Length: 207
Length: 120
Ligand SMILES: Nc1nc2c(ncn2[C@@H]2O[C@H](COP(=O)(O)OP(=O)(O)OP(=O)(O)O)[C@@H](O)[C@H]2O)c(=O)[nH]1
Ligand SMILES: [Mg+2]
Image (cartoon, rainbow over all chains, first blue to last red; front, side, top):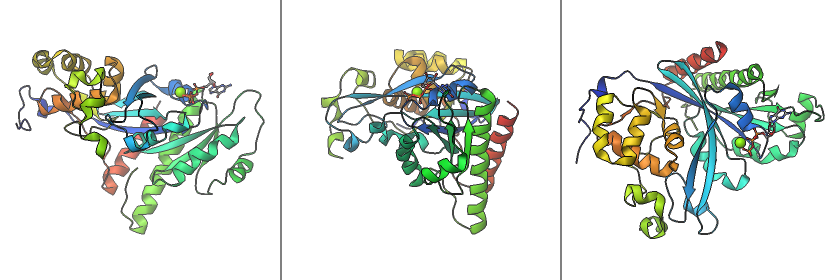
């Protein structure tokens, strides 16, 4: 059965549309969905992945504890930038036991923003560890909650041992302008990294 | 991977619509965009209820795999199998996700995303 060239409706003549993806990562309840919703043109949507011991779709069954079926929800938003360019924002599942799903979410992404809740800074250790061991450009965004202690950015960088070449910014996940700035920082950082890799002659790769 | 040998044993209702198949014909990215024409979706009517629902979501507009799963309320894995089938059958058009290689291509895309964000 070879349908590769089967084109009943002139599908192959349609204009190419490119999509890009930015990942919004972070621990439980740090404001990921809020951030996506502040800038997305659609109310953040949720899609569910089922996981069983048999392994369905995107999961790696060897990493699923037990044999039971689990549902992992991830939410995402969309920004249509041009007729042929769509940016998607994917939030990671907050619960740490679903981290194996992050690999699927970050694959092919432009970059990521790791959100940190200023009331629970140390919750960020695990998400930061994850990105330190991946080849995806990322920035760290401190989401300031009301009544949270005010930290100096450099203080946070030191206590979380964030490398000097990882951008660190303050944000308010509820504010569109602030979220926009976070995303701009992600893309600028990705461009700098890509340029640097290119200049050094390393093969550039994503995810 | 041992458990993948006979997935049907462990699987229940969600994969009934794929007749128990859990492996898509191709591994479509979450953000990969699909669309179809009215002609394609009219054809998809004969491809089964769930595939037709997918075609209707994509008729005349670009929708990512993740959006299709969300709008049809089907689990991601099931959606991926059906979408890959539809692409193979010529009933959905798969558009390109972000280029993974090529310095200039990747730089151009990043530049476009950056200006797109700044214009928001
Ligand atoms: N004051 C304040 N509240 C916020 C901010 N961002 C998020 N919140 C609130 O914090 C709560 C959690 O935010 P969510 O966006 O649901 O967090 P999440 O990271 O998606 O959570 P999970 O998906 O459950 O991990 C919600 O009640 C938000 O309204 C912020 O910048 N300032
Ligand atoms: Mg959330």
